[in-house]
Image (cartoon, rainbow, N blue to C red; front, side, top):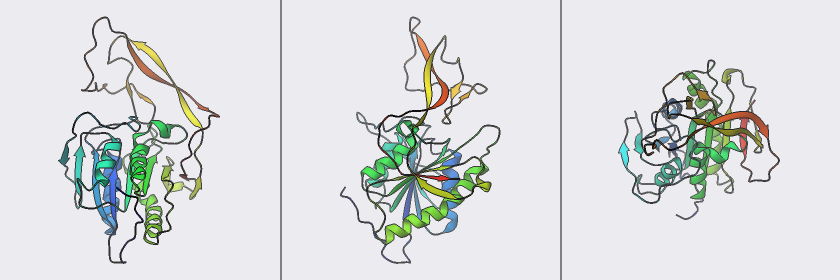
Length: 276
């Protein structure tokens, strides 16, 4: 696909927004974003998202076998649940193999948990936007700083509504052919969205959770790692269906998340929009 100089033909034309994520097609963040976009009646909305959670798969792609795309139930939207990674979904969604046209904008999210600093390397949410960018399609990743005990699913609706002015501004620049082509945007929203003080454009930080490993005796031990980079020790651990059954002599290790640290490593920079 050649790089697009995207122009919306006239003011009556509804721009097309394709939505993907890494938390899976049934995730409340994606569902809330789609509902808010559809409710405005300003966009044609498409969904191409993983059929199950794919958090922290980074920019991995499916190479050795076909992926399936199954129609999914969304009101007012053409949607598919895909047996691939976020990068697969973004690539398929903009390829014109699944949908008849290339979207004007790709939005990846809304992710459960912040994506800032070097976590953008691990993030499947950011990878979805990055893959669209690789194909020359303007893209945005959106993440909400979910905090257990404070956040609830209604916050995703507030997050989507808070991002509408930004989405409209991006589409206006796309229409005017003034949107920058050499970057994509990563948006982070705070836990307390109603009391945010606005937003500003900044550059990628250098923070990261220090991660390690702990030896365990079973796949059920140690809790479930959430996409917020925290451990959920209360719910049952879901064992991935594509992993082989460990043998008796196998050693088992589970990741552990340590303190938040700052690194001074040189790396790429992704423009980042943060709410204050």
